Amino acid sequence: MQLITRSDETQAGDNDGPQRDVSQRPTGIGIFPRIPDLWVLKAPHASADSSVHGGWWRASVSREPASTNLLEGETVNPTMGGIGTSNPCRRRIFVVDEDLAADELTVREVSVDDSAAFEQRRHEAESLQEWLVEHHVCPCTPRSLAETSLSEKVAELARSNRELEQFAYVASHDLQEPLRMVAAYTQLLAERYRGRLDEKADQYLAYASEGALRMQSLIHDLLTFARIDRNGVARTAVDCDSVLQEVRLNLGSAIQDSGAEMIVRPLPVIWADRSQLVHLFQNLVGNAIKFRAQRVPSVFVEAEPQEEFWLFKVADNGIGIAPEYRENIFAVFQRLHTRLEYPGNGVGLAVCKKIVEHYGGRIWVESQVGQGSIFQFTLPACTACGSGRACP
Amino acid sequence: MTPVPEVLLVDDNPADAALAREALEQSPFPCRVRETVNGDEALALLRRQGRFADGPLPDVIILDLNLPKRGGEVVLSELRSDPSLRQIPVVVFSTSRSNRDIVRCYQLGANCYLSKPGNLKDFLSTVQMIGEYFGSRGATLRGE
Image (cartoon, rainbow over all chains, first blue to last red):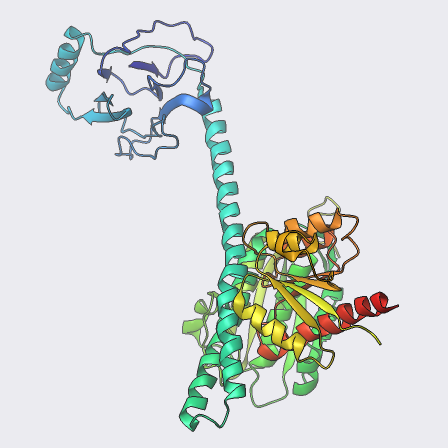
C-alpha cells in the first residue's frame, strides 16, 4: 500500500518529498492532522509509470465549510477510487483498507470528533507504523486533476451521445420492423377478409391496424425529437424571411384549406441550422392554424432585437391555452385534446423547445382561452459578423 | 418477346419477403422472384456457387440492410467491386430511415434507397414499382 498526500501548502513541482512504501501491508492508515486540499492514493496494482489517467485513485477535499460529506464519488476505473469531499472543520482519520483477495481498495473514515480520541488513534497508528502523511506532489496537480476530470466528462458525454445514437438507430430499425409487420398483416387481414368475418371482427381489425399505424407515427416523432441535438451542427447565417417562405410553402394546403391569413414582419438573419429553424417555425405556424377557433385563422410573426438575443413572436387568434397547461404543452407527447378533435402526437412543441434551448434560447407562451396565443422565443443574435449584436 | 424480369429478394424477414414476393408476382408487370435470407446466400447465388450453380442472374436485387451473416452493406460493396456483378441494379429496401444508412448505401453504389413503407398499400405499390422500373429495364436489355 502506498499512500501519498499533498497538503495545501505544498507547491507543485515539489516532488521529491519523503515517501514510504508500505506496499506489503494489507492495511494502511493515513492520518491527516489537517485536512489536505488534495490527496492521492495509489493502488498497489497500478504500475509505477501509470499516468494520471491510468492508475491513480484520486480525491479532492473541498474547503466548503458547509460540506459534510467526507467521501463521495464513483469509481471511474476498476483500479481507481473516486473523488471525495471533506468537511475541513473536523479533523479526521482516513483508513485505507485493502482487500487483497478481492483486489479492492477502500477508504473509510474513522470518526473521531474529540481531540483526545484523535490523538489516541494517531498514537496507535504511529506505534504500529501504519500511518503515513507525506508532503509529496504527485503527477496529479490540481490543474491536471481538473483537466482530467473535464476530459473524462467529455468522454462520458461522447459515450452517452453514442448510446443515444445507438438507441435512435435501434428504435428506427429494430422496433419499427416488427411493428410494420403487425400493421401490414392486420391491414391485409382486414382487406382480404372483409365481410367474411362478422362486423365486430372487422371493427377489431380496424382498431388493431389503427393502433399499429399510430405507434409507427409516435416512433417517428420521437426519433425526430431525439435527433435534434445531433443534427444541429450545420450552422450558417440563415435568413428567417426565407425560412418563413419555406414554411408557407410546406403548409400550403393547410393555409389554403383554412383560409388562414399570415402576416410576417421582416425577420432577422440568425446563425443556426436552417432545417431546424424551418422545423421550429413550421410547428408553431402549423399549430396556430390547427388549433383555430370558429373564425378565419390569423397568424402574425415578428421579431425584435434585444441585447444578445432576438425575441420572436408567433401570435394567433386560435382557441388559446389555459394557464395551467402553459408549461406542460412543451413536454413530449403532451396533448390537451383527443385525436378526434385535433390530430397529432404532441411532439411539436417539445421539438420547438429542444431546438430553441439547443441555441441557448427560451420559449414560452402567453395566451387567453378563446382569444389566441402568443408563442415567444429567443435565439442568439447573428454572430457571423463577429459583433454578436443583433443585426438590422 | 421481352423475357420476364428476374428479381433477387434478399430479406431475412419472412413476413416482408412474402409480401414482396406476392406484390411482384401479382404485379401488372409480373416478375420471377428468387429469395435468399442472408448476405452469404445472396453472394453465393450471384456467384453461382454451390446449390446456386444454375439459374439466371437477376435483373434487379432488392436488398434489405439488416441481414444475418454478411449484412446488406457488405453485399453491396462486394457486388460493386466484382466486375461481373457490378452492373446489376441494387435497390436497398430497408426499415431504416436513418440518414447514415441512406448516405452510406449511396456511397457504396446503391442505385436506389427506399424505406419500407409502414402502410400495406404503399408497401405493395413500392415493391411493384421497383420490379416494373428496374426489373423490366434489365429484362429488356437482356432480351436485345
